[in-house]
Length: 273
View 1 (cartoon, rainbow, N blue to C red):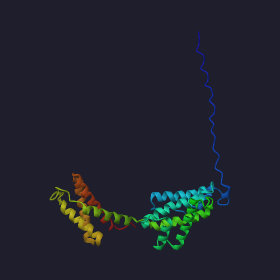
View 2 (cartoon, one colour):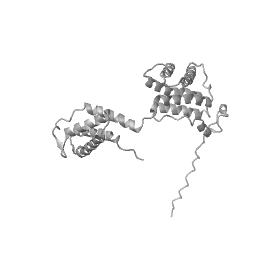
View 3 (cartoon, rainbow, N blue to C red):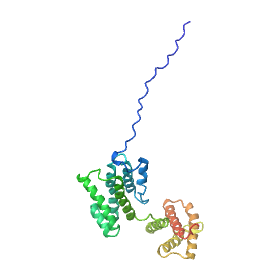
View 4 (spheres, rainbow, N blue to C red):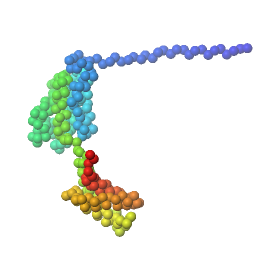
């Protein structure tokens, strides 16, 4: 009886050539800056990006900070970091001053208007001169050590923080939103066909008028306890009426009115202790 020969074992495949890349070598010119790459983090720890910076400004500042860290491996990155940070400075200055003048003029104007101190303006101008020298080939990309670059970049971080100002508080943001929504509501037409219509025993046009008067009073001179109580009564009526409005424009109109009333009333809720 013939038998099927056993299946041969598969031929061994050659082992893949898994070459682990050599770790980057510290730039010998960076010797003495930090004990190792991890210690470079402490060098840039004071460079904190303002929380209210735009994505563009945040990216430019964070990149400049990282360039200084990685100058441990490539010395020239420290000088490049200063030039890169000026993208953020020029952007913020142009927006704040409403001008597209060259950076040197923007720095001088910011100092003249008291937006930055004269000393800080001088530090910023040193960075600008370095960048201009790099552009013309008059300065080397190895002009600065990492600590020198930190000082130049810190001036940019400080200037951007001053120019942007402190982040808006929650109360300020709420007030801005209230004012914007009020202007939008004030220009809107009352829903056609809903004059004289009542929902849950409340005539919509009267509810609109009563709420609007109280919101405007809050924006112009504030409300006493009686008016605050009246506003909460309007909110209660809106909470009953809005879910029962089945026409799109009218529903949106009164939903916006409910938001306005809520923002105005929130100013008079005691803070949690």
